[in-house]
Length: 101
Image (cartoon, rainbow, N blue to C red; front, side):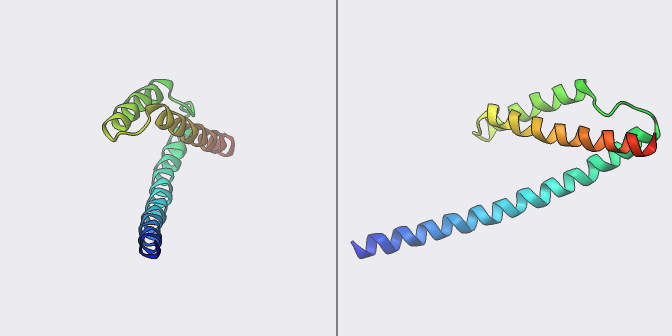
């Protein structure tokens, strides 16, 4: 029984290490993504373009749903996640418009 518990504890620790590493990757990837969307927001503000692009957003959601299906991830979850990210990006773009306008 002790061997089973020790083995389970070791497996659990391994999974948690992987989760921690992946969480770091997600955070740094989101930071890189937002650097690019901030640049897009500045360009949009400089050229008086609207902060949101519904056609692009629709295309991105469809693309992410396809990727989620390929990755065996719930497409509904992926859509909710992307919608959250898009809403943050639009909020940042609107802030750029206020500063530039």
